[in-house]
Image 1 (tube, rainbow, N blue to C red):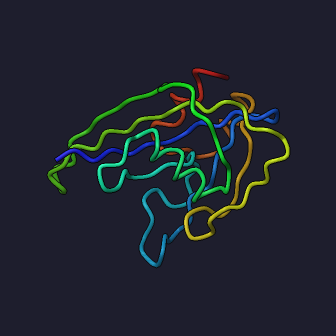
Image 2: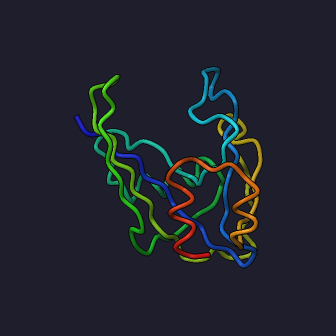
Image 3: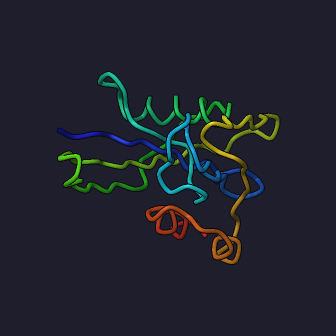
Length: 137
């Protein structure tokens, strides 16, 4: 079985939006608690990955995004779950300054903008994210 995880990298005039993962997500221990990530999650009910990224972004940040292209793909086999997890990262068009960020506090505790390698070096990001961001910083 293959599970699709779709994320979206959001450029703004202040840098790329990243979110800090909560310690617990809906009462359960979160994956990479306290780490920084970008909006995204699992595809549901045969959902198209692009639609997953857009939906997850809206659910996690309240932002409406338009996606331009895939900028990252990685697949791993999880031996504990006996599944392949494929992660896709899409690049969004820069969002307008009038959009406000409303975090889903069950999933993320705060947000910041990364606009340089120095900023990136000050935070602990999920394993794939540094490689994704370094393409643009």
